Length: 102
Image (cartoon, rainbow, N blue to C red; front, side, top):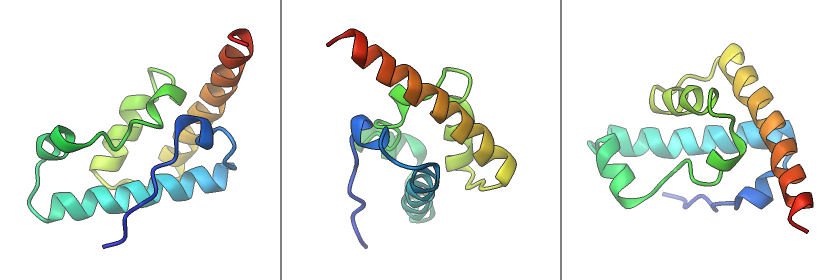
């Protein structure tokens, strides 16, 4: 099984919406593979946080949508549009907070 290179939160801020969508789908594929192998979500979270680099970029109200979509392998345009809109907002806020720390 190929190991997905884990981008940093900073890396994700330079991704296009399509690249972010593909990254989310790759995370979903990896997560579904682990769940289908018999691991529980608790087992997975005990060893890794698949949402780690995305979490700082997601508004609080969008984060659970992403998590549920990933766990349940939901890839509809409606859900992905909501996640990508939230990420766009979160990336802007992340960049602005970085400007304030400089």
